[in-house]
View 1 (cartoon, rainbow, N blue to C red):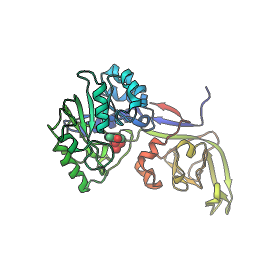
View 2 (cartoon, protein in one colour; view 1 turned 45 degrees about the vertical axis):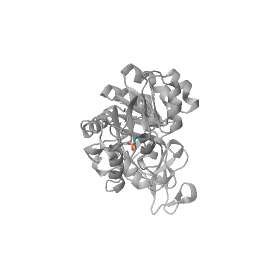
View 3 (tube, rainbow, N blue to C red; view 1 turned 120 degrees about the vertical axis):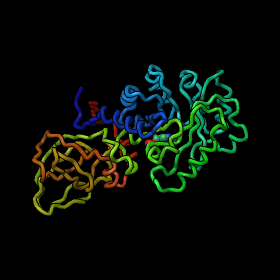
View 4 (cartoon, rainbow, N blue to C red; view 1 turned 60 degrees about the vertical axis):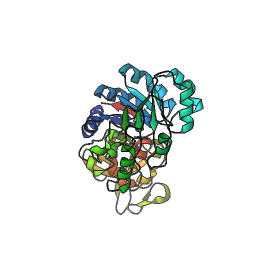
Length: 350
Ligand SMILES: *Cc1c(COP(=O)(O)O)cnc(C)c1O
């Protein structure tokens, strides 16, 4: 098989250390893992193998297609695998094939559908909306008996503003959710995502559901010291050139050389998920020497100012792996930076 001219280096130690840190920060609550969107772009199978090894026993995906790929791994470990987007009519064959995977029911129609297919004792999860107005049944529906008689493992809700620690909505959602304790047969309650874990023990309930921070994202400063990068992009230098003073680089000539400048062209572009918003803003490194992105990021190529690093054709450079930093430079959210990572990298787990 041919080797590609770009790579994603993925650190098992960092992933596991991040989960352990979030588990510690979750206090007495169990710590699960959101592994939807192919493990936020890193590769769900590889992520799940490592998290199961670390002791994680609650996995969350968005769809049944995602669950189908992970169910054997979760099953062998005796871990919960949960589908956040519920149970459509079209999902019934998948449920029949994967009876241990739990849907998160979020509408009255889904609850009714579940009642027709669940076997005695089969557990579901339920999402209740506490103010985000996304997925979930209402507290009023629960009070009116919607969930009566169901076997429920986890009752969950989701915070709209967890990454804004001062937002008054956090406490309002927490209080509405806490008021549902004992109002259903749910064995556990779960509210917090990555950022929610930092809001305090009142937000932990029985189970937390971090995603972003597992993969090196830092949604709130409170997590900065606890979380380390997991994924690092590296790309090969395809050509080096001297750009003369006054000449320009790349599409639309958005960068112009003040002085004669050594430039390296590397194999990475927006089709790999290296966002065009990083044009004239991103940075790569060789050792500690910075190589700023100059000009527009192309589909498959990016130009770097090689003044500080004597790179040659065939050398490899690595790109800034501080997600919070790259997000601030580009205006692209850490979530999009991760989940946009394309399929053209050779992936190396260490
Ligand atoms: C994606 C998701 C999470 C994880 O959120 P992060 O912000 O990535 O930690 C938790 N709960 C639900 C319902 C989600 O959809």
